[in-house]
Image 1: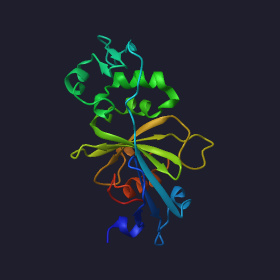
Image 2: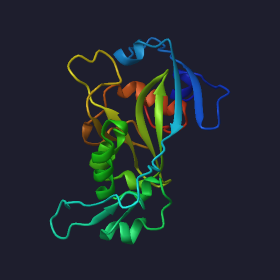
Image 3: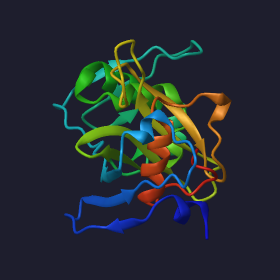
Length: 219
């Protein structure tokens, strides 16, 4: 029996087409659980496709300063295009709203324009790997948005997780800080550079129960 089967039983509940919901029973089997997991006798995890097809008026354009200097590319939010070399060579044919369409310049401009209405954008702009994902899902624990998870291409060694950071007064996840990006191994339970999001064990439990991630040890 796998570690996943020993730790919890996941049962799929009826749900609308846009939302996948699972009821996860947390079982410790005498093992010490993390503070985050101990708060749940059961975890109702759900995922919803993140809609990145934002609508802006025609002519919403701006020149964005590149990281490495040189020519400032022009971003058009109405068309979801950028004049930078990466967009021209790699993203032109990606459909609107796909993570593969967004170069960093598009993400920076979108994050500036939408602010707290779409906090994931600042995490995606920081990440640099968001274009490697075929889709991004909102991950919920109960009714709370726990994090966002990028579903990578089949050969990708890591997936991106975007989560709010922890502030001083936060007693349990999700945090209330700025959204940051984290990278989780697809074949193990390792977080890249040793940096894990607040509530990492609960996030992995939800991702595994929803079939997004099937890495190594949970705790």
